[in-house]
Every structure is written in structure tokens, then in C-alpha cells.
Length: 194
Image 1 (tube, helix red, strand yellow):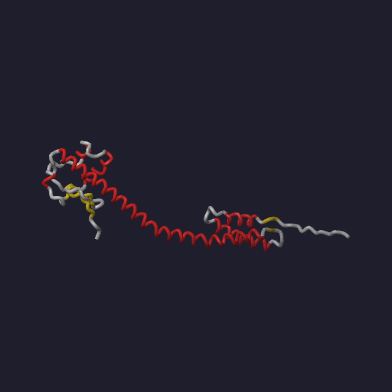
Image 2: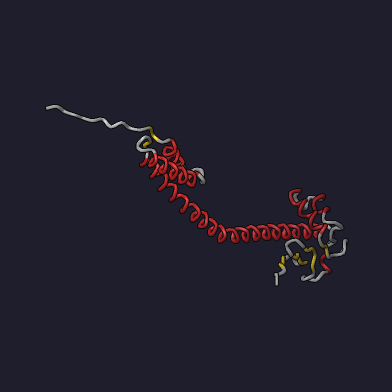
């Protein structure tokens, strides 16, 4: 018995089919799924019109399927990420603003402590300028920018006024940026937004 085996001649593999598969599987670059889908469709059409001269139908089909899934899924993922960001960003911004207000209140309290220390060492006399608190080492140079901003803001006491003659709820300094007020008793009050 003769064993007759016929070897089918295989056609050339379609480059478009290979490109479709590779581009559809590249997950790093977002638009490659769309390109892979288009190349896969073009490859399938060319393979079916080649009368067996081109092969790679399975690769092209896989490229179409994977590319199609990526084209559908990618916008959904972007939408989900956008929705998640829309919920989290306001909270992050509010937390940042609260941290800045807390920082300003802390620096305002430190200014109050420095004013009290200055007044105590000067028979109750308040400084002529807030810069004196830094120049005479009642505050660190770290607070210099804050003191400069306060100096540009609102100082309510009369320079040289006696701290001990003030009422406890008299205003010493106001920070207009954060709407915080330092009272003569050292307390810090916030103006509430209405």
C-alpha cells in the first residue's frame, strides 16, 4: 500500500493579520485596539478575496475580537475613572483648604504668643510693627513671610498701646486671607462663610 499524502500548499501569511493581532494586544497604548480592529477587518476581507494565497484568518479574527473589546471597554474604564475623580477631588481640595486654614490659625496663635511675650517684657506695651517680634527674637524667621502678610493685612491695635488696658475680646490682628481674627486674650476666631 502506498501512502499518498498530499501536502497542501500554504499561502503567504497576511501582514495585516499579524499587525492586527499585535496592535490589539498592545494594552499600553490606548488607540492600538481601534487600529487593530480596523486592520483585522481589512485583513479578513483581503484573505477571503485572495483565493487561498493569503493565510492568517484566525489571527485577523483574534485581532478584530480583542480590538473590538478594547474599543468598547476603554471608554467605559475612562468613564469610571472620571466618575471616581469627580467624587474624590472635591474632598481632596476641601482637605487642602482646611489644612491651610489650620496652618494660618497656628501661625496666628504663634503671633499672639509672641505679642504677649513682647508686651510682658515691655511693661504691657505692644510692638510698633510686627517685624519687631522677629527682630527681637520673639518669633522665628520661619514666620517672617506670615508676619509680612499680616503686616500687609489688618492690625487693629494702636502701636505702643498697652495690652493690659485692652478688653479680652478686642481684636489685635486679622488675617484677611483666611478670615481669622486674633483677640487680645490670645484666642483665634474664624469668620464663617454665609
